[in-house]
Image (cartoon, rainbow over the protein chains, first blue to last red):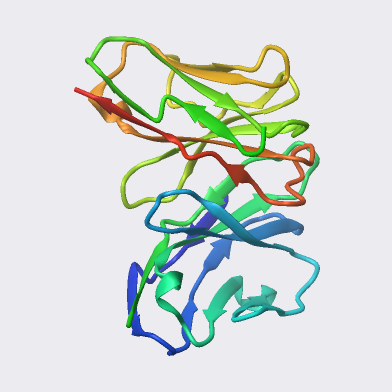
Length: 116
Length: 116
């Protein structure tokens, strides 16, 4: 069985602070995908990033960066110099990599509030 | 279409009634997924299709829930004899790749189902 744990239920920061959202996962698969999604107050779910289990390089996209560590089964998400528009619920998700393994297991999300 | 379209946006129904939720995926997307999201939780997998074939329905809670995608495009999720515990946001997503989630999901805006 697969499991994703986002231990931080809510985080509140002041604008321009850096913030890291934690994600820990459990799986018996040796190959898998990890994802982050953003759910702003408007309610839609927006895909942010996908990582393969065999690629442990960290990734940076503007103010966003992701740290994948297979040894600790973690896939953490850092927002640098946070902005009010970053306020949202962020979900980490895990999926098998097999051809027909379409479903993802989501964590319960971390609500990030960025105050001006 | 340009995005994943779901209808209705909101549905209020009386307990015991049947409901049908519709999803129109992005044109050309092979895979279509149904998820359910309770308040304060992450999306929970229900079922998914590659083209018209239902690949995995392990997440459907019971036999009151069913889904179809007869022509490999539009999908309908049907809930028979609704119960209050069925109240949730029902989300549809599609992806270009055949189950492999190369590009993550594109989610629709969801249908908020309330059973009274």
